[in-house]
Image 1: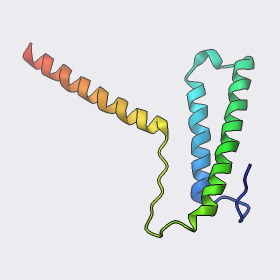
Image 2 (image 1 turned 30 degrees about the horizontal axis):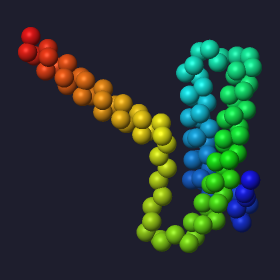
Image 3 (image 1 turned 60 degrees about the vertical axis):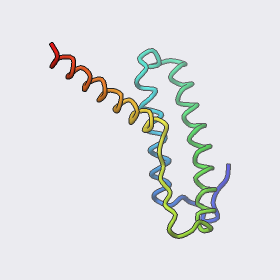
Image 4 (image 1 turned 135 degrees about the vertical axis):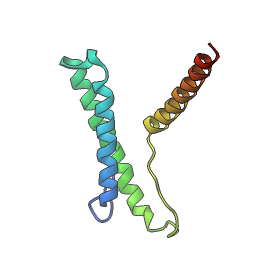
Length: 105
């Protein structure tokens, strides 16, 4: 694992790390078959490993941030957010089609 020169993460990066961990925990909670026993322990062990690897990445990012242009904005977008956005758009399209169908009847 990598630790930044400052030794700790900036607040925005700590928030990002916590968001990732909570997002992974939320994904595990959606699967009722994993609610206990060894499966649950395995999932939380994997979450811990992924979080540690992501923390190392965030430390490296923090170290290299000083070399970024000042006007460069870094935004974190999770795959889940992208999927949720796409799913929301698909749901809206389906609602619109349903409304058109209902209007035709």
